[in-house]
Image 1 (cartoon, helix red, strand yellow):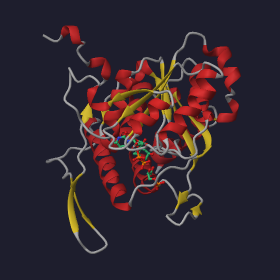
Image 2 (cartoon, protein in one colour):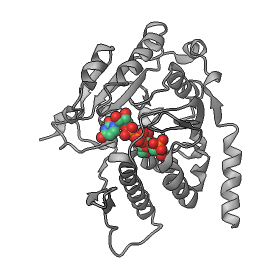
Image 3 (cartoon, helix red, strand yellow):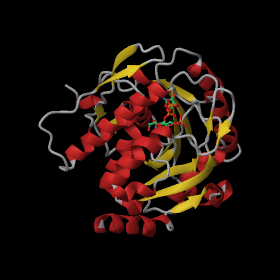
Length: 325
Ligand SMILES: O=c1ccn([C@@H]2O[C@H](COP(=O)(O)OP(=O)(O)O[C@H]3O[C@H](CO)[C@@H](O)[C@H](O)[C@H]3O)[C@@H](O)[C@H]2O)c(=O)[nH]1
Ligand SMILES: O=C(O)[C@H](O)COP(=O)(O)O
């Protein structure tokens, strides 16, 4: 209990000085401190033709053309089967196909973590901002709010968004605070139990965060939906809590996945947490955990699904092309 209270005290001490709101980072003020620092916005996108174009349009209009806060807008097309790539390109993004990036060095893997790792490899900015492509509440303040603390404070390495997350039902009824189901039922309990220093991050699974490239290139990327959880834990280990900050972006609405899809996501996150506990020497397993999940449909039909995650090594550890014999 005493350990729990100590961790809580540390989070409380961190919270004030490391929290801000997007309104505290107006774009014009950021331009005054940007200097030569370059900023890339990277958007992972799998079948997001209905939203990706609008998001890219806002970034280009408000943060590339009106002021040059953002130097590069990159969409990673994550094997979409719809017009995602075309919509993103039309809106002015550079688009790369996930499986084509680093294809001379690595075999393709799948999922969101792979898209983010490939996006890091294909982009060039000193600061990388990740934004999901299924957002329905996106505004330019998402990007400026995340970049602001990094431009202003040289000792900060990572900034994660927080927001209110409603749940919008199929009937269009909005339930305040009902969103982020995997966050509430899986990620938050795991973080509080095993990495309580991270408990102050109110939306640990959110897809919007920014970090310095130099740091992102030093951490592994878990594939699938393990990526956000893995990055938080690994970055805490690498840079420490005081180099991490949180910014309130207001509210976030997005396309909700089905309960069975979220069950698979939960499995991927639990396996990610397990891998970090093992790596940090905090559990000793006689055998690895199972990675299959038996799920049931409404008619009682069942399906066995695989929730295994893989991992990409820190990008900085990759052998450059010219050194590959
Ligand atoms: O194989 C994939 C799957 C997803 N995405 C994109 O990643 C983003 C987020 O994916 P989504 O399926 O919308 O995830 P959510 O249900 O919103 O899950 C939440 O929780 C996940 C686990 O932490 C995070 O990865 C998400 O960013 C976060 O929004 C979207 O732009 C997707 O198009 C890919 O690029 N490739
Ligand atoms: O972050 C989460 O917990 C998942 O994205 C699920 O979010 P949702 O409950 O808003 O669909």
